[in-house]
Image 1 (cartoon, one colour):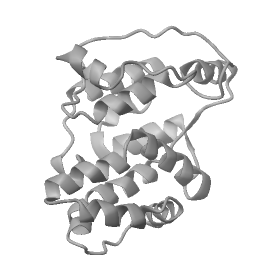
Image 2 (tube, helix red, strand yellow; image 1 turned 30 degrees about the vertical axis):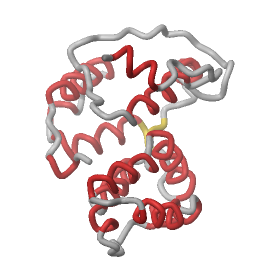
Image 3 (spheres, helix red, strand yellow; image 1 turned 180 degrees about the vertical axis):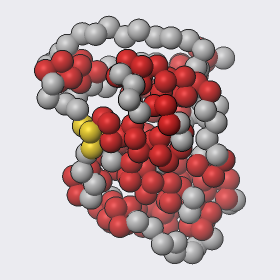
Length: 201
């Protein structure tokens, strides 16, 4: 089954950077995409300046102490508002969306594409599928960069961790832990935590 899906999407792409991201983005379009939280993967801690992004580049910046910034959680909250409005968009309503989403849609001609999606959507299920093909992983990443550059400045590691804890986990013991202890706590939460259904899209 997995080999046929791999073949259907043309296998791993030959891009010189971000191959894994683009490959997973293609595979996710097939549906039935799940997390595997029972396995531990140890990526190579290689540094690289071959390309201006990716794991190797990020590790180099972290080791140099020049990259301690994280996306602002408000960007994710704005996406939550959008994704909770999908059925309203299907019903031709005009939901009140955050300014970051509105601006991003304007700059990417979303209204034009939305009209095409609606025209070809025989049901809300078909609409949702097409909608999330437009809002795929690559578009999400572009939005995160757009929101960072125009609306919400990046925050520190501690601020990001505190924000997640305040929004979702509510675990008082996470404060005061060392970075290694915090990482272990976050990994444990990631494996066991079940997000409320209204946060899932």
